[in-house]
Image: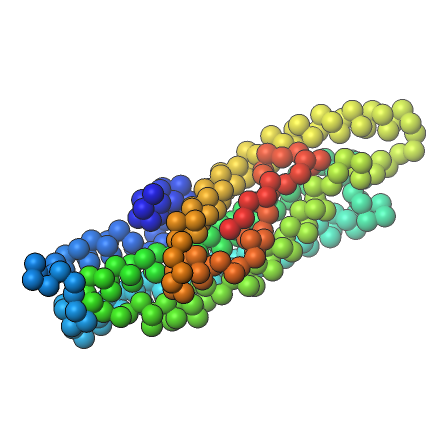
Length: 290
């Protein structure tokens, strides 16, 4: 599938409020098509064919505006995630101070409305953070693709310079966000323990048996509750990751400026594990990567 179609499908599947924050790939592609085609006598454009300083200045200005849009959105979302994540951590600490035994939640707290709400918010923010990482990758891929089309259409050599510029932009500097994703996953391990790790607050065997039965029922309720609030973000995040994987497979050239070459050396775990919002506390996480 061609990149433009992949990109369009992703825009349809992403969060509605994010759609206008992505690269205007289709309009840029249409602008390039409006440039005159090479003549029959000159099917391969020379470096000077349609390549004027005014044309390049015009195109670079448009791309710089796109970079500014990416940076503003990415930085704002990253700051928002830091604040939301810290607030969630404080809420966990308050719950632990009140209701933990040897650092583990008691069964009554394990399935309480308060902790279920925290779980749901953690699943949601984790999915949104991974989605932001893929936002970075998809927009960078779009920049590479549109620059390649510009150079091919005009005979220019803009891609080398502008790709290096894009690599230094805040929206492409995802290391802090990656660390935040991993820290979030550590908290998810705490929030989604194995059933055997749930500590019963009473030592009475009959009470423990009743509590275990209630816990089993509450697991089902937890699955529904978390799924209702987080499944949309989860689905859209999985769609984005599949798009990135497809782009890496399609870009098989050895060009150092290709998408696969730039992302090929990144650890596949950088994106983090995606927690299925409909998984039960005793289920393994679903691992999908960038």
